[in-house]
Length: 205
Image 1 (cartoon, rainbow, N blue to C red):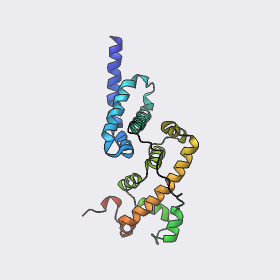
Image 2: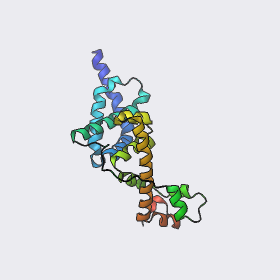
Image 3: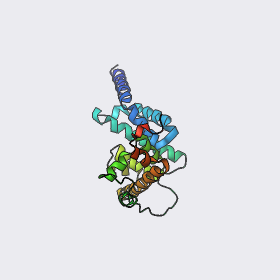
Image 4: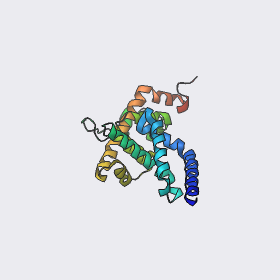
């Protein structure tokens, strides 16, 4: 009887936790799995339900759920015969956003050009740009700069040496900055910014 009551209490606790963390879990799942995000979140909650008894500190629950989600995603890639660490060999990117902004001078009246350039991007813009990056670079960037995992944690989650994660983050940041610049040019983002449009108003009437 006591065990049954404990299981019921744990299920209730997980339901409350899932309601609170669902938006964040879906956001992370979309970055990792795209259109398969819903399936990823469902499998994450199923695994969490089976192991909720291992969660000793409720304050650690948000991080705990995200670790499970990343593990589910990684396991799914393995079953599909994919590996986020494997991408075609490509030339080293040496792009510098600071240098490019200084040379191109897209915001000639700005005293804080780098800040103003980044401020021209909406949250949706950033998500689209991140989506252009290969898994190898996108996933560590999302885990580090959006979810707040340490480099050591990312190494454990992705089963990579810490040194590899450091170098991947460095190269990923360069590719992300290059992708930001390309996106700004393609979408006319800087023209919109010069006209004073707010990011959320582009394309609306």
